[in-house]
Length: 628
Image (tube, rainbow, N blue to C red; front, side, top):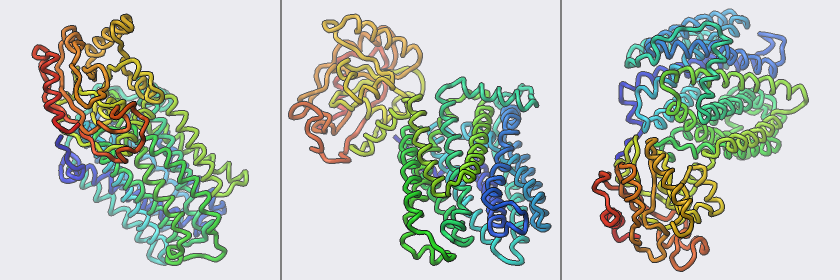
């Protein structure tokens, strides 16, 4: 299968100008916000009598609140109008907001600065639905993970640069405030110019009548989310991630000043390390997912988010100081490396968690109101982030410290993850499949482009082990409903995966004729619905390493529902832990070691009228070759 690097998108007009605009927008937001945060954390008395702990969370709430207030309208606008023009309009609004912020910096006026922060949140709320809804219009489904990974990475790099630039300028006496004002206005102007090069993205629903009632339209957006249960629960997962991130990142300035006793540059270092982690995790998603939307990475990400946030709690008390610490001294202390490592890995696993969820929403939401689905996502994100700010304030008033807040967040994350994966077992099932492929085996793929991108087909493969179906499911971009022996279907642990993947158990006419007929009826219904059906025509797992004669069931399936048949072959599984070589399967662990090399190959689809059991067996045997 030809799979090109995601980085090629950066050279193509359908992606590059949009990427540049969103990069500059994220850069500008963070130059402004980081400068403001540093000034409020280290020069609080110059602006207000409020405590810095409360002020940091008030500022966070002010930036997030507009997402709740304006996202419903933004989603309608993004569905009704051409999207490249909308992007230009939102960047022009950003320029006006930065001019207001510049005035606030020059005048040392907290009211103007907080107003600019609030209006910047409003501009971001308008941009959000367009940002994520335009990607499926310009990218193929196989490019969505890579495209989203680049967007999240670009955002992380922009955050990193913005924090460095904003934090450095804010720490400069005299000319720093002037530099912040001029820089934010210049970045907005550059983004406005670049937005003119974004290709047209036609309106999804040009006849839509705008409902300006925020309350009723917000409720309507939430109803759109609930039309697809998986999309809705994915949105809840994304919103939880923003809650989690807000609980951690908002505390970084005071973590540095009050807990680690670091200067302004230590704050920047903490945020830079976290952003680098997010970017690295987002880019790795493309490789780990195999150029498809691999939701199995989501549970993997949630595990890391809990483990390393909890470890951060245990790491912090051992490295507290009484005297202020400069950046160089902070980095030279090896005890601080564990703290930085935890922040880096929280970011990496956050990338694993968030990128597949965004791609899943984009691919499974209705095209006609995709922007409003994303707007609904932004509304819930806003609610969760405001809730995070309010909870943080309440916990501080209750006497918790920042490290204790991190531990509470880690434990809450574990509870939420278990709850979501109980509601949507597909996430956990895909995780188990992904874990198998990336821990026990190294899988090579060839010819999988012969599997049709849409419409019904039967995939016919040799049967070597108990995990054949899992390996094929992990390798293929489309969901597959496997037909399997009812005894294998009932194997503990694997049964959970098979049931979640809607496998179809089957028995021989001698064992259970009623189950046999139900299986054929379900196969016919699935093919008529346009699904892929996976079968093992031998009807049993080999105990010799060679193919058993293909049974006549394949002929009965395609006679009833004529669809193309794709021959496939697994190589290298014979002799593995899950095969029957030398006796019963799953009785001799690690006899092949870990990361054993295996392969899955496919040939061109055969028309239904050309398929026979004998001919299909020869095709599969030729694909397998001598490598069993």
